[in-house]
Image 1: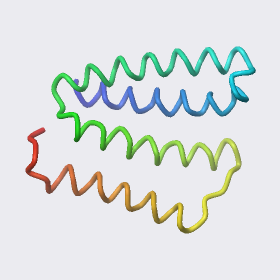
Image 2: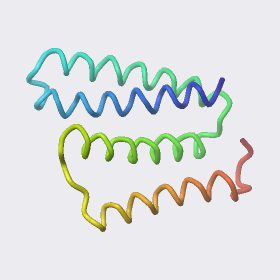
Image 3: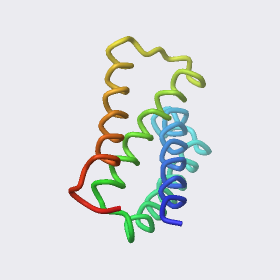
Length: 109
């Protein structure tokens, strides 16, 4: 259940970020409202995940996957482009999350 909560938190964070872009600086009511609700729900589910997942591990997964998914949304939905340094940076973030989760002995999870 803890990873389901974390997954929900990640999806809601990406949803909130995407609608924040669509809100045009919080000048559009519906996207602004969705942003606020998504972030509140996101942090609720993250707090539930943190009951049983160490903070460093949970935040690495949350941040890493959030970056990747948000970057994909920016390319697919908002037609923004990623250059080679951005892609390399994202790959390095994902590699860091992988290393932390599968090789680190600093905290059990």
